[in-house]
Image (tube, rainbow over all chains, first blue to last red; front, top):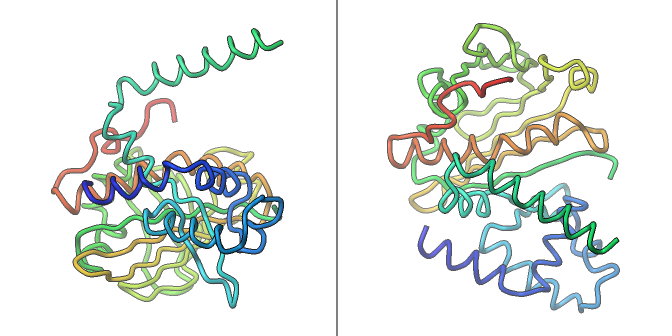
Length: 109
Length: 153
């Protein structure tokens, strides 16, 4: 997982690229044009970020006819979680994350 | 979104032939796919089903397209939960492409329906099953949690 993991962490270490992943999570399978809508980034910048995400395998591109569609690929992040969270801990980690979300929501309200 | 669709891409250090066997043969699927097997004649139009360890059907459908060891397209309907069965058929595609010393496996699972319960439910399972498959082919050992049918399902 060495060189591949480096690519994943580098790709994730930029807010613009995490934003692109968030957009794909919300609406999977978008073209470059669709991704550029409502973003304060140039088309060139989005193209560059997508290329790094694809190289890290965080984004999978699939051709449908003449359209290149971009999908969030959950596999690399799953492998990172497999590496550091063992299956016995998974339930407890999730419970704590839910508790945090709930308590922080109450404080905000 | 007029449809629900997830794509999973993983690179596995193996050959397309070995990967194809692992995806279709019971002696392999039992190890990484929760002790299940698939019943199928593996030709276009053939009926297909996933058999749970107790012999009942988890999902069923038919082969739409088959081109070993490159591409397999299946119609897939859940048979365990009525609300998912009611959604009808989803479409599952496996694509295998050699890349250097590895094979790029692309798994696409889609349904022409927004917020599909089936597609959302399997989205939790696919990454686990596919990383276990990768582990099995690369190290000879699958991930322990995927060797048996999940409790309570």
